[in-house]
Each structure stands twice: as C-alpha cells, then as structure tokens.
Length: 142
Image (tube, rainbow, N blue to C red; front, side, top):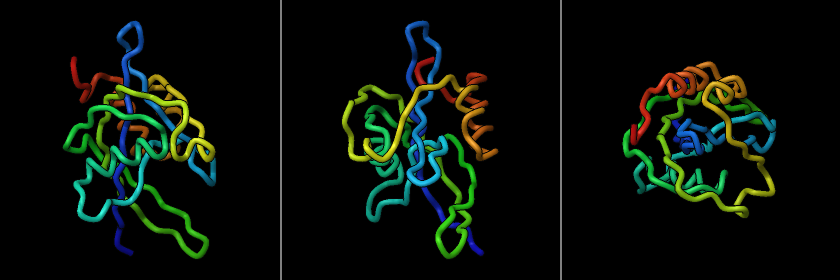
C-alpha cells in the first residue's frame, strides 16, 4: 500500500533560562502525545497548513520555517483499516499561546524539554527528531 502524506508543526519556545521547550498535544482518540498534524490543504503551501494545524490543535501561533526539518512515519488506524502515513515536520517558533482554541475541549497540551518529549511520543522517527532538537539541531535564533 502506498504511503499517504500529512504535515505537522513542531512548536518550540525558549524558557526563562534560554532552554528549548516543545509543545505536545494529545490525540483525540487514543490520548497519546503527538505534535499538531493533519492533511495537506488544497491550494495552500504545506507550511501554511502546518501553521493552521498548530492553531486548531494546540492554540499557538508564531513563525514557521517554510521548509521541513524532517519527517516521520506512522500507521493511522481507521475503523476498517490501517493507513501508512509519512509526516513532513515544520518547526514553529511560538510567539502566542491562547487559552481557548478550536480543539481545546478535545485535546490537552503541555510543554516538555525535547528529551522528555521524545520519551512521551510513541513514533520512533518522531522520537529521533525530538532528540536531534535536544542536541541542538535546527534551532532558529541560536
């Protein structure tokens, strides 16, 4: 079966000490920790869709890199089947976080260190991206 494609935002910020933090959200059905992601938007660049998913799922806005920092694969479970998905990940430097957002009643969100975020997610390739961030890879403004 051919892989389908999704896009995601990897929301980050710097804490008071300058350390990087990563925002994770819970998935709606399984409640596992993930990054905001979704399907590409027709007629819109993928990075715009990633920014939109970050707003809808996590209630954050900011500056998004226009090129992906990496990708990961997972299997999306549907009632009748499983779909193999490759997710392109765009780094989002968070500038605004609101208390109410479109999916606030459906998801939890929390800030993690990159290493703790890697421990919290299940997808091995996403863990690797988060660990790369923990080691200082692809961080804007450094």
